[in-house]
Image 1 (cartoon, rainbow, N blue to C red):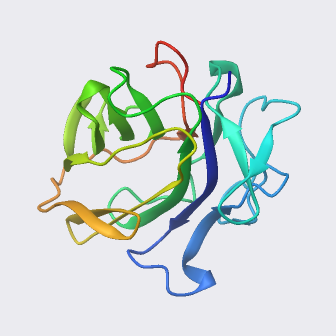
Image 2: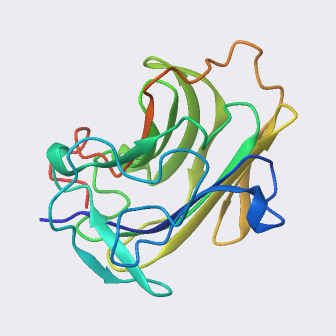
Length: 204
């Protein structure tokens, strides 16, 4: 059963996207998984699902994802993200989960490098830079609720050693003094939407 709906992912090369030229990746998922704006590869990696499911979003369409490991939607990091300066903006809506259900729910991840997820039964979201399975730096826990069929918007920006995270336009957490040893992305690294492997009952 599908677990997540993602409306768009917007990545920027700088802390604030002021013009179209600042945006390095934009996927509105209007009937296609190919990004509309892309400084790197616009197409998902691997063997994407042959018939992705699209559904009404906040504006236009959204894609349903997170149901199986085989159907994870992911894109190359190269050209799209800088680990020390950038921003991420996306809409998400749970389909079959809610805060407090005692499970992990990943929204976006870069394996062993970056993680935005809902943490177990606490009802908290977290955004971290990782070094393998170790947390290196990030704003920590943000207590925001997620319930089925309700859209939430999350945005994160980082630059000059500081990071801020926003839910539905409200600043909800920050971190300062980014360590100098935050790991750089590696060749072939991808960012993934709604991976289900940490979730017992799916992550749609």
